[in-house]
Image 1 (cartoon, rainbow, N blue to C red):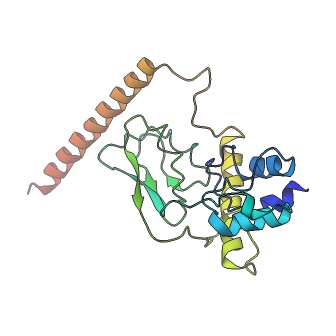
Image 2 (cartoon, rainbow, N blue to C red):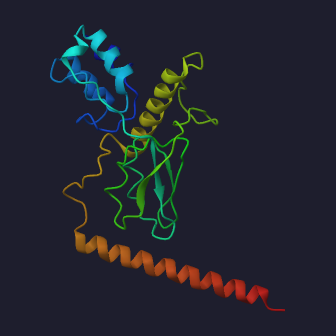
Image 3 (cartoon, helix red, strand yellow):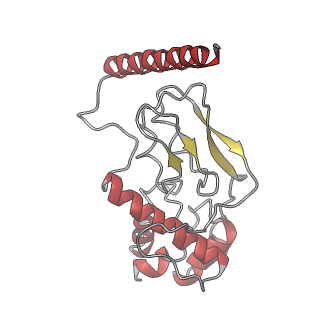
Length: 217
């Protein structure tokens, strides 16, 4: 079985709920008979049935996965310190921000995978209920775009895969939030956070002072 034929069925969330690093590794494991077609929770029953059909497996031998209620990540603006640790963790680049600046989640792109939560040192990210589906509209972004002639479900998957590949080109192959051996210690991280908090407070004080001076006649 060609892994590509299985990968094209998957929703391309890259959420790792299946136990693999992304949709493609899961597809390869399926093709090699190393796992089962019932592990893609976001795909639910339709994708489970499609995988079972392509693998020529009896779907009644498995329990179909049940998707979680739709969620989106939300960043508390009062607690975000702009450390940018959530940026490489988001597999579809649904977070806007830069170091020392407030970050924001693009609800139209967020899949609610939750991979951005663990790297956040201030616990300012949480998943909130959201009944809408991830958006699939391009606004002139570079790179190859999905075929607009695809049906909405496949177009969405192709769009998320496009964003994932662009994310990999920005941050490299390793996008796991788990620290590598060269990551700073907890003490260094806390010290960095304290510096960021103090810098943030200083900017707020300076901004209030500037507004006060501007309001004087």
